[in-house]
Amino acid sequence: MVVCRDWAGGSLLTNSEHVDQYDLLIVGGGMVGAALGCAVAGAGFEVCLLEVREPQRSWPSDEVDLRVSALTRASQRMLENLQVWPDMVKRRVSPYTDMQVWDAGGSGRIHFSAAEIGEPDLGHIVENRVTQLALWERLESLSNVTLRYPAQVSELQTGDAPAVVLQDGGRLTSELIVAADGRDSQLRQMANIGTRGWDYDQHAIVATIRPTLSHRYTAWQRFMKTGPLAFLPIDDGRCSIVWSTSPQQAEALTALDDAAFCRALTQASEAILGEIREVGPRGVFPLRLGHAETYIRPGLALVGDAAHAIHPLAGQGVNLGFLDAATLAETVIDARRAGRRIGSTATLRRYERARKGPNMAMLGAMDAFKRLFSNEVLPLRLLRNLGLSLADRSGFIKQQLVRRAMGLGGDLPRLAK
Ligand SMILES: Cc1cc2nc3c(=O)[nH]c(=O)nc-3n(C[C@H](O)[C@H](O)[C@H](O)COP(=O)(O)OP(=O)(O)OC[C@H]3O[C@@H](n4cnc5c(N)ncnc54)[C@H](O)[C@@H]3O)c2cc1C
Picture 1: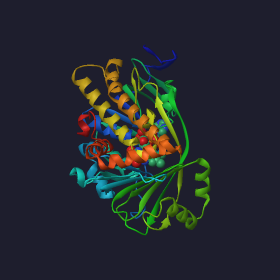
Picture 2 (picture 1 turned 180 degrees about the vertical axis):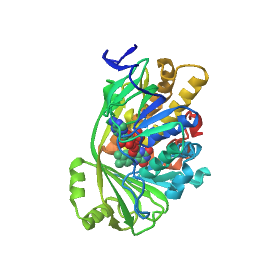
Picture 3 (picture 1 turned 90 degrees about the horizontal axis):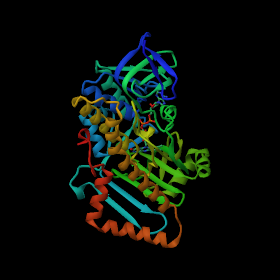
Picture 4 (picture 1 turned 60 degrees about the vertical axis):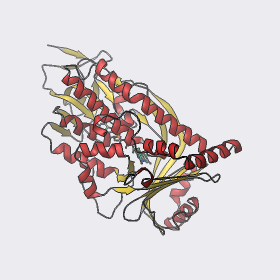
């Protein structure tokens, strides 16, 4: 009888008991985990995905969910390659052709336009549940995928024989376990992987609103001392807002009745879209920067928010997560073709090397942006306004910025090309 040891030295599994064996076990079926599942299952891997809750399956067609993401062109290409984009389009994706960013503390302003770079749009605003459901339906259509929900892990074993024990007593073994269980990742904690980061002392209020003026398929963002306010266009004329501000102001704003909230929003946006005349339910998310000290252990890899949590001001969180998923998929597919073990440190290092640097650079850039725009020191204010205006007039800088924002900069994994 073989007794496997977990990373703390305790025994977890014996081969005399029934175990379900997979190539890849993904814990967390949010957008990132589900995308990874589609990518590796498409290449023939035997995949199991564990999720604590079933995704929402249906909703009224005129309802816009509170949680939306601005998806880059790189993410769109990945979702097209995974054959889920057409289903997402059927449900609703809202293209935006322009982006307007301006500084509340001066005259600095920058305008990006898809027309300037010969593209039909800069990206799409998509409800998270639309993306997640399309990916789940794809997973459900694949015979080499097992979806288990509700399911929760009670023990994790990494090393040469990765395995989990579920709360219901089930035991699953796999060549590689992937933690895709979000910002507060239970698996990351079980593997004793620490994170570096801090609370932003900002909360993001999210809601769907209807302005009196047309949003002109433009994503609008005003930087204020208390935090950025973004209007993301939905194709029925409404906008999804992300209003990042101090926890105290967030609490006060969410306590307002609808009419008073609309007035406050009209004022905070300088009525750029006229008066705000309708607001739906509001949600609040505390914001935090977090980066896992390592993305890998033997037999374990972290992807998406489990590896990095970023300020939503540039709408990059899930886009980075999709690149993690595409890169990890490519790494394990290549490893298997070359006859290497997919859970070995040598294989997983390739994934970590490819993703940790770019993720750290984006986390750092967004953090610097957030600090720069919350700073009221006069020279800094002048400098950032000047910087915005200069960048607005420089075709080259703008093109570089817009390519980055569309996720087209740097080395892209095959799936996102
Ligand atoms: C206000 C706001 C606005 C944002 N806007 C954007 C944007 O415009 N563009 C963008 O790219 N990003 C945006 N983001 C970030 C984006 O939402 C996240 O990066 C993205 O949701 C991360 O996806 P994920 O699949 O890694 O994690 P999650 O979405 O957190 O999914 C994790 C999944 O794991 C499941 N789970 C959790 N624990 C367990 C467990 N123990 N066992 C099994 N399953 C488990 C959960 O139920 C969930 O389904 C925004 C974030 C916020 C807060």
